[in-house]
Every structure is written in structure tokens, then in C-alpha cells.
Length: 421
Ligand code: HAM
Image (cartoon, rainbow, N blue to C red; front, top):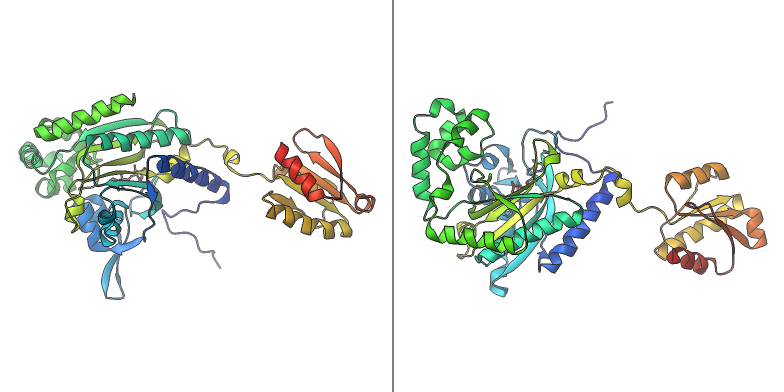
């Protein structure tokens, strides 16, 4: 019988890699806590309408990429393709805004998009998602970008490149929409089928098309930044001057529109050279109309999400440094030694000392080989003869130095020995 494999685009994260994931999660908790963010945990399944209303009916995500199903003929449900709409749903459902006008939230978890899988692109992937609700001050735009870049540097990225743009607001967007629609009219035959349709449904999306010919056309198009109102311009300038306070380098990319419809004013992306075609590690922006669009009060917000898999791929290939190695290997030779080793091994573990032992009755040579392979820092050699004499050998696996230690009070001796290193 053929073994059953995982679904295409869904991948296992194996034990060799989970050390990196845990390292990143520790950095998330530490860095985000210092900026006042608290964790929220939300379901992965939501009512389909949440994403239709939140992300926008004419985005690629909603049009083509959602895992949606009719739940036993009752209602349409969707595996979340992103977290922002879900966080806001929870924020509204539990009236978090009533307890505190400002909410700083983050969540980590899997997202689902039925895209074509390739290097760095999966159908189930993970995001570290951040949302700051209740403030429209441009300083907060700079603050979340600062936190993002600082976090990426703490994880070990040397040069994350920050691109920013402004997408205007409900006041200035209509004038731009008119301009871009006018520009694209007459150029329909140079555009892909999707973009031809987008001229009428959502012309801003043409900026986001990956088709080379569409990109050529859009290169000559009017830029949103030329149409923004005074309020948006002022906001954008203040965002930049706040970024400059921290010497955060950034590039203004007037062609960046992001793939979700909810953004207003500031939008940003972080990219890196070393990821190939899927070079975006993180993306985000301000969404001052989204809470209202999802049925809540008029509350502004800004946030971003980091692609977890892409971040993991950027960490050094040697995953071993993120993996905890055993402090001690107990090499037990002979039946009495085995009897002695088992409780000692587990008692040391309960003291927080990561200890391994042999359960197969192998020779000393092969037990030491295994201790080496597991990169144990110390080995305790327990033979029946040593036991009867009340003295055991403790070997430092890095230096090869060996010490004889007393059986009496051995747990305390080992604990002190290991903690002193
Ligand atoms: P997004 O740009 O769609 O934004 O996704 C954010 C990040 O998730 C991307 O930069 C990328 O690193 C990662 N990502 C997206 N799709 C995939 C995929 N198929 N495979 C692997 N990684 C992927 C959002 O999702 C917004 N909700 C961000 C946000 C939060 N805006 C405001 N608040």
C-alpha cells in the first residue's frame, strides 16, 4: 500500500527546524512586549463574509485563493488567508475598544492561500501578525515599522530593506481612480485578462499584477502619490520624519499598492535579496476604514505580518545552534548500571538538566558514539564495577577531560558541575 503524503503546498516542520521557530517566537515575545503588544489567539476558521468584506471581493486572495467550503449545507466557512480581519472580528466581538481605546495585539499562526506553490510560497504558511488599533497618529506608523525592523535585526537579519508608500484615503482615492481608469482605457489589449477586468472593478490592483506586460504599462501610469490630499501628504511627511528620528533607512516605492484592499495612507514592505522571487518577508500598512467596514465604530488601525517560513529560511543553515543539546549522557554498562541509570537520568531531567541515556544495552564505544552524535556536553560512565566502588567517571565531551566523582550526593554534584560551566 502506498503511504499517504501531505497535501500539496502544506509542509511539515521537522524537529531539526523547530529550534529556529522557537528562537524566533522567543524574540517575538520579548521585542513585542517591550513595545506594549499582547498576544491574542484566534480561530483559523471564520465565516467567509469576514474576508470578503475585509480583504475585498476583487482581490486575488478572495477571488482565487481562499479555501472555502459549505459546512454541511449550513454556511460558508473559510480557512483564514490572513489574520487582520480575524483580529478585528475578535476585537469587535469582545468590545476590546471599550476597555481601552488603544489595543496593541499580536498573533502567530497558520494562514491558508491556494497559490501556486514554489520556493518560499506555500498553501499553508505562518505569519507573525501585529495590529495596533485606536491611533491615527503618524508616529504610530513609524513605531510599528521601527518595531518590525528592530525585531528582524534581533532575529539576525543584517539588512532588511524597507519600502514605503502612501495609498491615500477615501477623499483622495476617487480622483486617482478616475485618472488611472482614464490612463488604462485604450491600453486594454496590452493587459492580461485579469487586468482588463480590473479596469472596471478595481484599477488599483493592476499595480499589483505580476504579468510583465502589465508591469510595463503600469510603469508609465499616473502615481497615486501625485493625487493625495493635503491631509494624506502631511501624514506621509510626518511618518518619514519620525522614521528619520531612528535613522531607519527606507525607500519610497510609488508603485507598491499591497495585495489587500483595506489599506489607507501608509503601506510598507520589507524585502531581502536572498529569497529569490518571493522576496517579501513582511508587509503591512494603515487601515483607517476597516473596523467600520466590518461593522464596528470608526477606529483607525495599522499593522503588519511577517512570513514565518521566509524568516526561518534566512537564518543560518546550521540549525544545530538553535537546537538544545543534551547536557549529559549516561553511558550505562551492565545490568546494575542500567538499573541505576534510569532513575538518575529522569531525576536529573526533573532538575531541568537535559539528560540522555542508552536503553539498548550497547557497548561503551557505541554509547559514546551516540553521545557524540547528540552533541552531549558531558558523559557519565556507569559500569557495574564503578558502582560497586562508589565512584563514577564524568567526562567533558568537548575537552576530553575526565573526573572521578562520588556516588554519594551525585545529583547535586552533577547539577553543580553542569551549572558552573
Ligand atoms: P501579506 O503581504 O499578504 O499581508 O502577507 C504578509 C507576509 O506573509 C508576506 O510578506 C510574506 O512574507 C508572507 N506570505 C504571504 N503569502 C505567503 C505564502 N503563500 N507563502 C509563504 N509566505 C507568505 C497580510 O497578510 C496582511 N494581513 C498584513 C497586515 C497586518 N496588514 C495590516 N496588518
